[in-house]
Amino acid sequence: MKYLFILFLIAFGIKSNRALAQDDGEKVRILFIFDCSNSMRAQWQKSSKEKIAKKLMLQTLDSLQGVENIELALRLYGHQTKIAPNQQDCNDTELVVPFAPARANVTLMKDKLRSATCQGTTPIALSLEEAGNNDFPPCDNCRNVIILISDGVEACDGDPCAVARALHKNGIKLKPFIIGIGLDTSYLGEFQCIGEFLSADTEDSFKNVMSYVISQAVNNTTVQVNLNDIKGNPKETDVTMSFYNQKSGALVETFMHTLNVKQLPDTLALNPLFTYKLVVHTTPEIVKENIKIKPGTHTVIDVDAPQGFLKISVRSNPTAKNDIQCIIRKSGEMNTINIQQMNTSHKYLVGKYDLELLTLPRTYIDNVKIEQGRTYKVQIRQSGYVTITKREGPCQIFVLKDGEEQWVCNVPESITPSTVKLLPGKYKVVFRKARNISAANTIEKEFTIVPGDQEFIEF
Figure: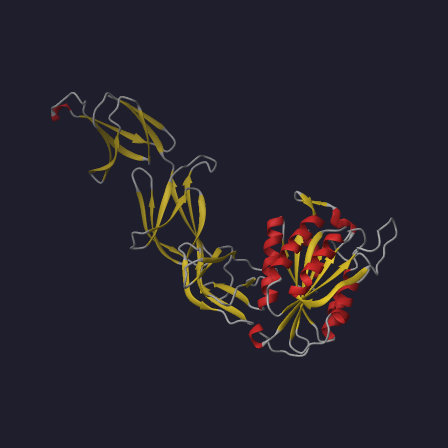
C-alpha cells in the first residue's frame, strides 16, 4: 500500500556543533530529491500529484533564485526505468543537477523537472544514502539541507531508518519533516525513527508547508510558543496566534497553535528581521509585545494561558432550540469579551467573570470562577410563553418578586398579537387603550409562566 507524502530531511553541519547563521558567512546548500515514480501520475485534488508537486516545486525554485549564499542541486528517482509487473529498477536514482549557486542552477533544475517522466519505482533509502554520501562536496561552513518529495513509502526493501542512523554515525545529523497527504495516521509509526510529521490535505496546505520548510532551511531560525497552564506546563493549545510587525503593525504570520505527536508545542519558522507583537486569541486575548528572535537559534516564547471551561445550558430537552445568549465580562468590568450561545461550552482564561444572560427578565450571575482544566456549569430553567392580544395602546410586562413590580419589557402598541418568552414566575401585564385618556382606564392582569407552557392574555 502506498500513501502520498512529502518527506523533508534536513541535514545540518557535519563538523561543527554550533548553530551557524548566514550573518557569519554560512552557505546553505539545499538538495531537492524529487519522486518520479509511476504513482505520482495518480489523480490528486483537481490535477495529478506529479503536476501539483512540480508546479509548487517550480514556484519554490523561483523564490530561491535571488537569495544570497544559497546553492541548489536536484536528484530524481523513478525517472529512468518504466515499472512493469513484478519488475522494478531499485537503482533508478540520479543526481541530475549538481550543486551550484541558486542564480545559476534554477533554470537548469526547472528544465530537468519539466522534462522528467514519472514512470518508475520508489527507492527512498538508496536515494538518501547516495545524497548523504556523495552529493554534498566538502565544506567547512555549510548547512546542508535535503528536501525529499515523494508519493509513497520505500518500495525496494531499503530501510530509510537504517540509512538515517548510518548517516548520523558518519557525522550527518538529520532533522526530518514528513508531510502526509491522505496518509493514514496509524501508518506514521514506521517513520518515527526519521522525524516530525505534518499533514497536507490540499494543494494550499502543501504550498504552506513547502514555504514553512524553505523558510526554516534558509533562516535556520525557529520559534516555539509555550502556552503554559497554571503549573507552568506548556499544555494549552488549539488557539490561533497572530504575529505582527511591532513597528509597522502589519500582520506577518498566522498559526493555529498545535501540540505535535510528542505533545510538545509545534516548531514555527519566523523571519528574524522583525520585532514581533504576538496576539494569542484566547478568551480574553493575550498580547505579548517586543518579541525579538535571534537568527540561527531556537527561540521559546512563554505565554501564561491557563484555561478552563464555562458551560451554559437550559434545564430542558437538550435538542430543543434555545436562542438565548449570554454576555461574558471580566468581573467588575463593563467591556464585553464574549457572547456565548446557550447549550455550548467555551474556554476562558482562569479568573472571575460576570454573566448576563439575555433572558426575560435578565439573569445575572457574578463572580463565576473559571479554574484550570475544570468546567463551571450554569443551568437555567426552561422558559415559557405568553401571547397578548389587545387593541392599540401602551402595554408593559412586570415580574412580581419580593412584593415589588419589576419591569421586564414593553409590548408593541399595535393590535397584532405579541408573544413574549419569559422565565418561569409570576407576572403582571399593564395595559391602557390608546383612545382612553384617563389613568382610571388602566387594566391589569396577572399570570404565571410554567416551563415549556404558554399563557394567553386578551384585553
